Image 1: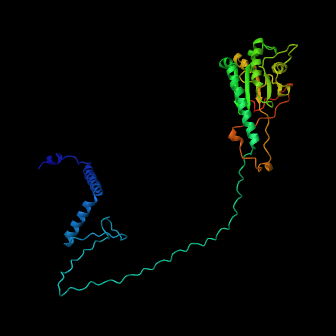
Image 2: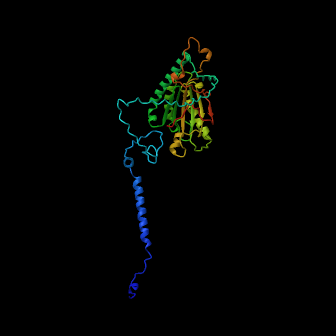
Image 3: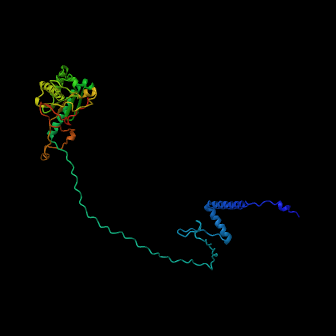
Length: 354
């Protein structure tokens, strides 16, 4: 025979390993699919499968009993690694019926209760002394009545001045401030004086005459203090070499007019503060106009609270100053003296902005 068959054979295939590799990958993929499907089973289906497997091998259906604290098997539904079937007891008859045996109770040892450590009682600490409550000053009836009369007199004068100065008050040229025993009247210097001068204008004299008439109705001990203020513009004239002298001279001019109108000289005083207590910014004309002013401060006389030894007198009763809304003023300044004082006015005499 000719060797044509040998010549017609196909060359060997060296890539047959791909078929085996593809089969291996297919089986491996199937394995992972089965594992994934098994992991996604729910609990009820797994219990049914377990019952079916046990019934197929043993012919019985076990009762899956879960006991708290018992050991668990591989599956959560199994109470033990190997489920044990429960044998069906024989039916009871009158002949073979027997009383159930009672198991003797097991006495478990009870651990002793831990004893709490004895806590030694803390030594009694002395109570801190009570905080003393500050007692309000007690004023006698006479002093209380005097304070009430002075407050009423000052309120009456305030009402008179508000009616008298209402045109200037509405134009923000005069400001009136009142506390229970202090009255402060702030007048713009332009209402009273020419620029750089301390002589009162004719209209200012008539205005201050009416103010003096109202002040004369105050009780005798009331003190009247005149305070002069300027802006920061320098002045250097033969008559007024500085703002100190100008502010003091303006205050003295008003003091002298009040003295001519019949107000006692020992009730009057004058102070000059120059440019050192401004109400507004001196960089603007409006601010400088507010700073140029004359302030009339009316104070009630000082009232000394009685000593503790006199608070138990029969004619005294506890009346606190707060019940009268009274603030005790500062001591009155020296009488009728033109003082160029570098210190600002006392807090009892505020100077509100017009």
